[in-house]
Amino acid sequence: MSLARPWRWLAALAVVLAGCSTGGNDTMPVDVPTAAPSPVRQVPDSPREDVPSALDHPDDERLPDPLVDVSRLVNGGPPPDGIPALDTPSFLPADAVDFLDPREPVLAFELDGVARAYPVQILLWHEIINDTVAGVPVAVTYCPLCNSALAFDRRAAGRVLTFGVSGRLYNSNLVMFDRQTRSLWPQLEGRAVAGVLTGTPLQAFPVQTVPWREWRRAHPHGQVLSRETGYRRDYGRNPYLSYDDPNTSPFLLDVEADARLPAKERVIGIGSGSDAVTVTTERLLRDGVLEVTVDGKPVVLFAQSGLASALDRANVSDGRDVGATGAFSPIVGGQHLTFRRGSGGFVDEQTESTWSMLGAASSGPRAGQRLRAVPHVDTFWFAWVLFQPNTRLVK
Image 1 (tube, helix red, strand yellow):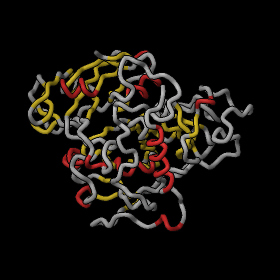
Image 2: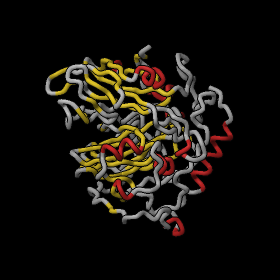
Image 3: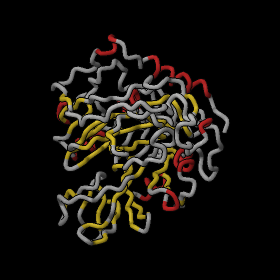
Image 4: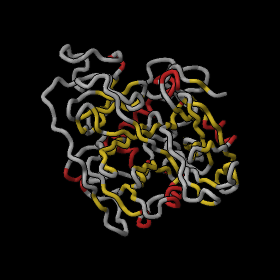
């Protein structure tokens, strides 16, 4: 696929890189919140190992055979750690956050009753957050070039891994590296494709991109990633101006994208391999609710308007409305619920209870109950179909 206006995306990455040194002057905080951010006690990571590095030589003969053509692990511009992952994140209580617009996207993550929001305006500049939630080491990740957010358990192959941004791209997707073995992990692949840990999968956790107002309403006592990251960045500004323009091509994509949809059509993807399913966000927003079958099990998809694109305007808060989605099991207490879009959310036909975008019942006989979230990804069509070439596209 030819690149449209490649200079724009090179310039965007240059802006990110220019702000990504780790010198002493970068330790100034960028916001003055009304409450002091609290650091999280992190699970200790495993020691670094004296093994051949796929980060340097992915085709080293001492390593297992790579799962991909290593010539397609292209240099995206920044060097390893040039875009710095956050390893010691700190958090604010939701009621102390004054830097987010109601429509701004945040990544909603919850584990064992601990709810956290990770503003995309911060992830645009860091891409990976190495965190610990409810005692579980997790990596919350966002690739701006694919508009893809995923969360993973950092425990794999008997290790607790910490991830960094390699500076390489595969199918225009963020390639992570673990600091223990320096194996390479494309984000949307969810497993190591080169290095000592080649073939090792990561367990995915559900993560949802929702408007700040929606998350704050659901979790008034939840925790929000602070902009006091230890780096000086222009958080709130989008360095990838107009990147999600559907008339532009993906950055450094070296293969043709599936022509069934425009390359940058927004889609929701669920499942993997022969069980992968894709629905366009446009169709889902039109219908509001759609049930699909993934791996023989029902999954209900919700969509509603009110989410700003992080990749559109110069200020993230000014982005056009691209809509938010969610994926859930419709089985509650052994009962298969069917849903329709209602005036205050989503209504199940069986009890007339109303459910939120985050899958919580706010009124009716099932008030206080939750739908079980199903891992899914909001992304561009080209990215999903290149990693899931056998996906079923719901027309």
